[in-house]
Image 1 (spheres, chains in turn red, cyan):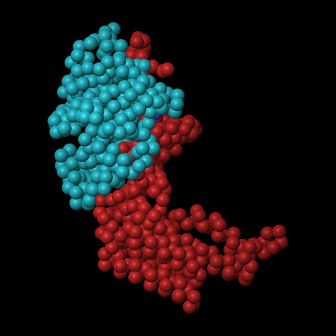
Image 2 (cartoon, protein in one colour):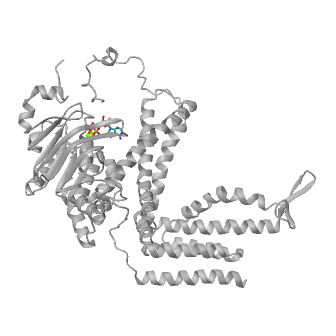
Image 3 (cartoon, chains in turn blue, red):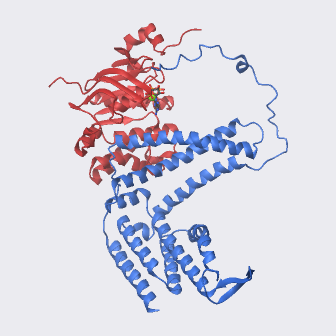
Length: 311
Length: 251
Ligand SMILES: Nc1ncnc2c1ncn2[C@@H]1O[C@H](COP(=O)(O)OP(=O)(O)OP(=O)(O)O)[C@@H](O)[C@H]1O
Ligand SMILES: [Mg+2]
């Protein structure tokens, strides 16, 4: 059986601790400066994520069009619009659909620049890499409109059908991501969870999402604390390599720490009666605006698909 | 049974991960309306016992009875049981960081009453009153994880008080608070107790002990109880305080 720790300091305090440290305290500036290293940048990045999440909460509090809708209505109609967008083939129709998401963003008082950037930053990563090769005549046959040179004696270039296909995919993804961003930035996280619960998403799933969100903040807080603690104990300039070694080592510690915290957060929720139902202060109500919105969404989805078939 | 104690644990054993013992044969009763303090050195098992009392950890061996029924993990899976138990007993964690998880202070305080199933108007009223009572109304729209340590503690306390439980478990309530807020919290605990609430708290603060408790139990380093009695008596027993690491040995 382990006993508790012995009373503090039965061992005499080390002599060096009781004497002032000589020579290291060159507190005057030396004129040499260094840009922040990896480690410093990590702290800033952590702070950035918190800021982005707060931006979402701010946007959700604006008195815009989408913010005023019932969360369940919003979730279902936007999902419906996503399906409609995925059925559309014609590029002009997709352009119209994308433009419509921009209009919705403006009506919901979202900063348009940030909204567009958020969507288009995500696209090259996920889509560009997949789509680019498909524009080449090696994969999609057709008339080469953008010749790129020759490769093992074959003429290589982008074909007209390849480019059209790529534009279709990119536009469709952009529109879908925009719709998703519209939903998540105009809805408080707790209301979204409550809406998921109301729509019969399994309790356990909603519970995990709820804890994960709270947990994200703590994790970022821990990262910031750990790096700051390290920075406070780093004498002199930090070099990149030891910074990276620290990152590797601290990831493990962080995992242990955050696991324990997640456990406590969950206990705290259970202690106050949480069994997986997210409830919110304001009750769900279906109002005139919601009904009007449902009508608009149904007509819009029908028009998109109809227009697409008609063209 | 008219004279059954409110809470009763018998021969509790608990080890974290089956390897790190935290409780090794603890028996204790809590009577309705009393103020009971748990004393002991760091790591002796106070927080663990409180978590067992709150139905968050379940003993490896031994029994726990609360409000006349045995509390078990499977028993608490019953929704009605769970709701009844959770609304009668509240727990203010040692680490208030863990305890605040909602996007705003207002929602944090509303969380418990909402899970209890109170209607919206009642929840609004309770949130309003608790925020005012704990003097945190100006923080209502802030995110709880952006507050200072002491402010977080108040939010944590508010979030539990809003449920109006009849038993309150405090894990080191006065840690992280400035002296004035400490004084205020001590008064609040005394007042709540006078209003009929049962209080169980873990503390290291021997100075305020006589105010905060009618009775105290002292944990030994072996994760068992070493003594029980009125605070004055325990505090006068210098040998006991020495062997339980609660008093300073002169060097
Ligand atoms: N999550 C955990 N995993 C493993 N061991 C743990 C964990 N939490 C606590 N322990 C161990 O269980 C024992 C009792 O811990 P507990 O937190 O109950 O002590 P405590 O009396 O509240 O101490 P303190 O006064 O420092 O808060 C300690 O030996 C501790 O090391
Ligand atoms: Mg403790």
